[in-house]
Length: 312
Image 1: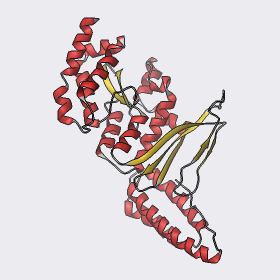
Image 2 (image 1 turned 135 degrees about the vertical axis):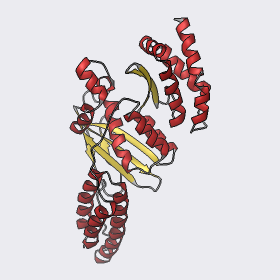
Image 3 (image 1 turned 90 degrees about the horizontal axis):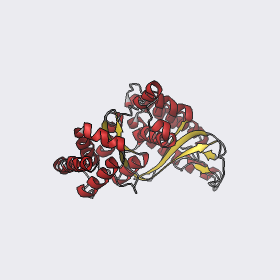
Image 4 (image 1 turned 90 degrees about the vertical axis):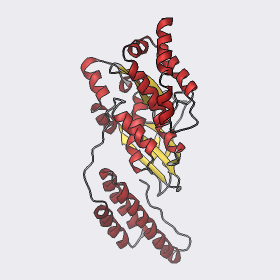
């Protein structure tokens, strides 16, 4: 075994040049990441076996750490090296994805949680985070019914994405890892850590509406390709200006904040289904502008009265 560990150490340290050439986050230290990698691989007999059989996959995985700019530090819970499809792969957690978004300035703050039947979950007014209350000491919170992620952007906007259990499992059923489990009973994170994968799935769908950065895009691409998850979301081709203008016109016709709230909710649902970020930004700006004008009128009509628009 000591000989195997020596070989793994040599393989990992052999990635030093590649690591340095693609490093995107200068706070990452190769020696520390190499130590984490060696500990992870040598601490699992199956991982050690795969690493010895496919040494290039180890080099690739360590290089991806630098290219994406994420750490294997177990205390951070951002990323792991796992054996998959006869190779060592870099796996990124939902925490890692959110940390990447925050580190690159895409968002200021993020939270993702599972919602159970005995919890209370509500979407609140426009530009506000949802309400999720539960007893953390309860012996049974019921069955999982959904998952959500809420983020605060650099502009101060709150964006919330929700997915039901059925929606999550529909995505799970299309993943290569789940198919391998169904066909060969080969364990995967969907079997051992459904909650973590549900959060990651929700984050991956939500990120389409976050401001983009190359590192976050690369991390998502890695998970969908080399990472072996194969999580894809259905979308349809749309014309940004056309879709935005349809709903902007509806918003501008609204004569009350209540009516505007209905247009916002309906239009947002269609835009999110299309995955059209450009239309979202245009529509949101128009709704905010119209909403401000309507609130000013309503404030003169009924002193102190204001109304809120629903969040996404």
